[in-house]
Length: 166
Image 1 (spheres, rainbow, N blue to C red):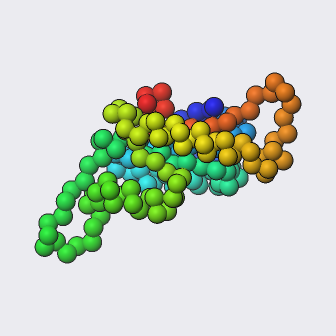
Image 2: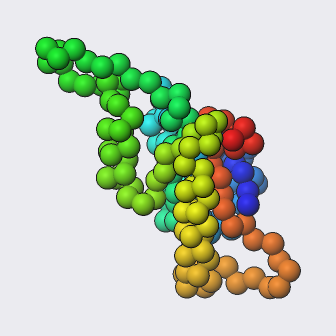
């Protein structure tokens, strides 16, 4: 397992932790992107990570999107007679969940590490997803390793907070 905290824009060009650290992404079978859903710019942060993965040539790897801090998500209900288009601030957690699940299907989960909500489901889904990834013929062909050689299994990519805080 490897933890790549705080991927920033330009990371693939050496900004932040740089290439030496980001090369660990290549050895991982499964990327787990943990997102602070309570952050007002979480969608832009997702794009930064996705762009970085694309620039590193890792956008084709299996990925799980974990939306954390659902206990801290807030939204503003629109007045019934308000005809202006809804903004991100007007979207309920249920609507947001439906939108992302429609985009990503089984590749996303919504959790609250603080409240321990959906943590067991996350563990089960990650174990199953990693198991599928480890049996991938494509992975076996790309990563021939000898006995005793270490290889990353799960990459935790953490946009806003360290996974250690979970």
